Length: 160
Length: 104
Image 1 (tube, each protein chain N blue to C red):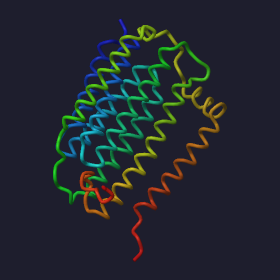
Image 2: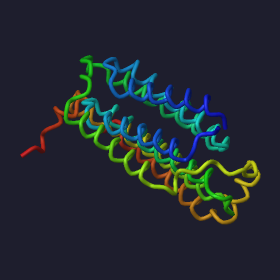
Image 3: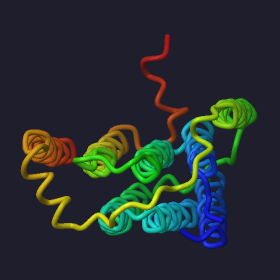
């Protein structure tokens, strides 16, 4: 895990996240949101979790970002731009970041370098999912089905 | 020289705070949802970081939690955006300041 690549990707991700949080034009903010998750997926790759990074790209860029774009286009009569950051929100976010950073820097046990670990293969992830995590997997399947049916029911036209 | 766990956690804290900023200061319902997604992404980054920096465990718990959390985030986004569309049909706006019918 190289340091320069990590810093570059982290800066890119945070810049995209800040743009997604503050840009006035909704479409630009959505694209920044997609870029943020490309950055997070790249961080996952750097940390050795390739499968999760790929799943993140599929789910967020392939599904969530496209859904957001569709929703913005469907609700576009609201042409007004979003106003940027307000003072209370900015103050709370900065205070949260300061508090978290203070806590992280004060905790000695997290100042460790990465140990050398065996690469995690997709085969092992699949085996784990199908053995020790088979009940959570079934519950997630149920949850996704329920969520999709619920979303359909919510947006269905009411019969007059 | 590789980054330590501290650095990854600070990046994740920054991403979380940015998501909080978006969720608190945006007035457009879709972007409040985007802020929540960013906070979930930061939490996932923490799970992956703690998995990577801990002695190897059997099974890889951090990876599993991250996978499940991504699936839940997808379900949440689908339902949330459907709610935004339903609200828009009713009130012709997605600005959360104007959804004040229940305000006392």
